[in-house]
Image (spheres, rainbow, N blue to C red):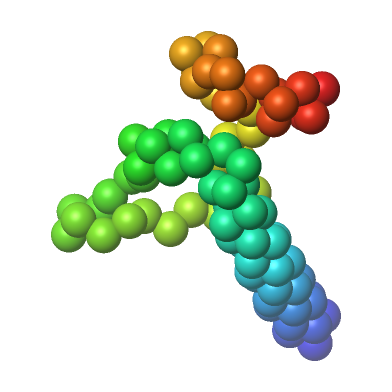
Length: 92
């Protein structure tokens, strides 16, 4: 019986983790939509970082590994643009 109970607990933990990842992915998606309003240059970075599988479809990554493209992580040539100065200051 012990092994069965432990297996169920493992399954529940995996399901809980999956729910948390789904929630985080939803929040990240919402963040990205808002981010594009203030930092439209992120769209280029997102497109450049997208990985495709063998069939050409975007790879699904775990939510916790999704890049957020915060201003501080953007290349210097983006951060130095005049329209980016306010957004970069906000992150500080």
